[in-house]
Amino acid sequence: MSHGIVWKYGDNVNTDVIFPGRYTYQMMTPDEMAKHALEDLDPGFAAKVKPGDVIVAGKNFGSGSSREQAAACLKAAGVQAVVATSFARIYFRNAINIGLPVLQSEEAAAHLEAGDHVDIDLVRGEIRSARGTFHFSPLPESVLGIIAAGGLIEYTKSKLTVDEAEEKKE
Amino acid sequence: MGRTLTEKVLGRKAGREVRAGDVVSVSPDFILSHDNSAAIIQEFRKLGVKKVKAPEKIVIVLDHIVPAADEKYAQNHKTIREFVAEQGIPNFFDINAGICHQVLPEQGFAVPGGVIVGSDSHTPSYGALGAFATGIGRTETACTWATDEIWLRVPETLRIDLSGRLGPAVSAKDLSLKLIGDHGAEMANYKAVEFAGPAAGDFSVGARLTLANMSAEMGAKNGYFAPDDKALKWLAGRARSSFEALASDPDARYESVLACDLGALEPQVALPHSVDNVRPVAAVAGKPIDQVLIGTCTNGRLEDLEAAAAILKGRKVHKSVRVLVLPASWEVYRAALKSGALAALVDAGCVILNSGCGPCLGAHEGLMAAGEVCLSTSNRNFRGRMGHRDSEIYLASPATAAASAVFGRITDPRGFS
Image (cartoon, rainbow over all chains, first blue to last red; front, side, top):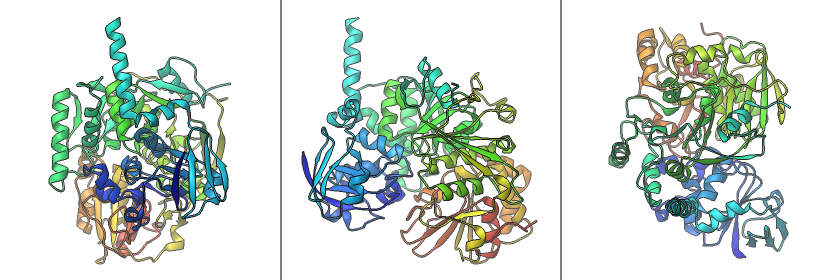
């Protein structure tokens, strides 16, 4: 269970406004990426976001480019999860792969407002707030495994080590 | 019950019969990346393995910022070239090849029934030739380099039945924009899009590449045409491997079917700042513009440059407009030199850029200042994408772009001879 404050946005929040193309092909550390989070959507966001905050948005969050920084910059900025009516498919995969929980809940997206305090339980699939408790389908176990490992790199690393050990046994 | 092309292609790779909703683990035929390979290499190094699993499957095309616009981009390119040499990656295309989504088909990597994953959202383009091709992120690309394996959920399919005949100066781009405008930018989120119906075969391979490319803007996982004689003829002398021309069965299960009459289609424009904010050109005709971009992975093929040249030949670009032309590849560039299309464009006052992504993604070569407006044949018009966040991008076909370049205002291309 983790506590946070809501930032609310609309439909079709695309990867260009989350992390602009002018930075996409520059190599940056997570801290540098965090400074540009949502720069072309909400220029004040990066300076004000607090660890644990939650982004709530409408349909098709993360549409557009495959740029992974659009997920990584939010994680680096301290965002604990993105809740949306729906996600664009590459964004969904990227977010899981870098360890940012992406939670689909039309109800939560409709009712939560900017500034609301929420508590999120990833395992039970619950978002609790003064406006009510909203449910989302808990992420599949394999996906939770990637998030728990800290992302796909760590997850694959441990898998590769296991494979190697098994090969040696054989 | 029959199967869709996507179910067949992924099923063949997985070694079992699969249906939409199944999750498969497959070894892809090719793994594409471009300038972002520098970042992928950084992720790959974290995995603790020294060698990529299958170097012959990795295809790297430098296209996003070519030649390098500054020393940071130059360092990225250098890092990539060194990695290519270190790992013995045979399929590397440097700054004089073109945009990956044109280079992969031209160089025969994209074949019917093939499976290609790429760290670029417009990877679905290769469905134009009947491949299953989809976009992934950097971390996943790094892991696929190491494991030669990726999990994919078999998508449901939306079929678009095309009938009738396009009118003069109306093209595949207008069709894409109309579909996205009518049904929204997530009309095919997570799905496969099949372009079918009696008129599908009328589209050239170039136009199919445009439609499959734009399926990414519908949210699609992959977009495709069944490979027919036209596709097979185009592939002759290009395909790098033998292939099986798989197509959907007549009784395949589709999640939904849309019908579309091409005869009723007019030239379309997507207004700022989303691809589904679409109107007929006639509704916004007269809007002044500062820049025109003709080219990119969406509309930079020979037929696109020739459509623009046909309008601009013997005319001049309006004095208030800058026109940038990006041939999709060097093969296209050479063909357009030979056909005279580039001469007509240069004589009209257009600036020809190296084959590559150019200003489309906002990194270099013709970015916009606050308040400026660009009419572009590319695929995205998101806020700030081609420069300042207060600049504007309108999306249209090459014919509309060329006609608008002549008048310095958004102009309906019908009526130009």
